[in-house]
Length: 384
Ligand SMILES: Cc1ncc(COP(=O)(O)O)c(C=O)c1O
Image (cartoon, rainbow, N blue to C red; front, side, top):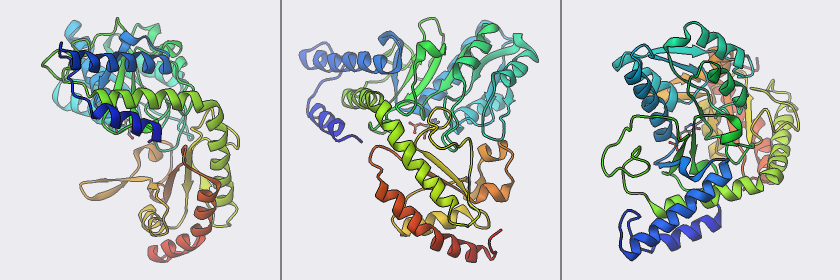
């Protein structure tokens, strides 16, 4: 988190007042919430009335996908198709899966190219299988594993050719690449605070005034009757301040962080260990790939071994697999990009941000050869 965000939140947390209460303390908390709404709206290219605060990205994705599905199906029972890309976050994919298992939805998946790019043409082809049956289209702005940035405006325009609502998960994009809700033409957009230097546990769904969603939570009718529940004024303030700062610093930070990423990727490739980058990678490019995302495919070893060995060296990263019921599964994103299961199992994800330095990259590159050698020995193989 940005230190100034922690400070501002700590001060607000010391104040009492429910933003829905009418007494003086409640009105003061409401003022904080409404000012934060304006600041967040400004940072994401939306109107204040389009900001629905939530408990984070997962909740916003669920509200967008499930809420839109239910609203569209209720208005027209033929609209049961949920068109999503193969590379979505589980908060979108599992939501679509739940609707298919329990509420009569039909999943419709759009593939990607070997770099993780989902083209507007592929989205058009999926829609045109039967345009009248589509409830919504959801394609993320930038991928959390390989950092691929999508042509969101092109995909939104494609969905709108058939008057279909378009949702984009911009959790990874906000504060890292230019994000403008209105200019992109999205109807719904998910953002979360903890990816922009703000606190965990608060996010927002940007919701056009004419977009209809059936609420998932019922109660006090807060947030346009769409998301009931008492708002956490301190968290909302922290989110707005962090988003404002991340967006304000973006022009300078994107170049600095992308240069660190490039040094990391080039350095890893130069070690002679057969390492190559995953996704769209070109030195200096921070438009088509998130500046802070470095994704490495390390042949001949398991990502989990790399993760634990790097962790012991003080370097924290993620792998290309996720644990489902205790069993590591290769990433659905990497498989969708056409990688084999064994390639996907040797994937490492390193994320650089506002606190990352040259020294961090040097430390990683210094530790990597020994770590790879030990991980390969553990896998019982040699370099491949
Ligand atoms: C692309 C994407 N969507 C959604 C989420 C979920 O957000 P949250 O952790 O705020 O629930 C994440 C979290 O990392 C993400 O990367």
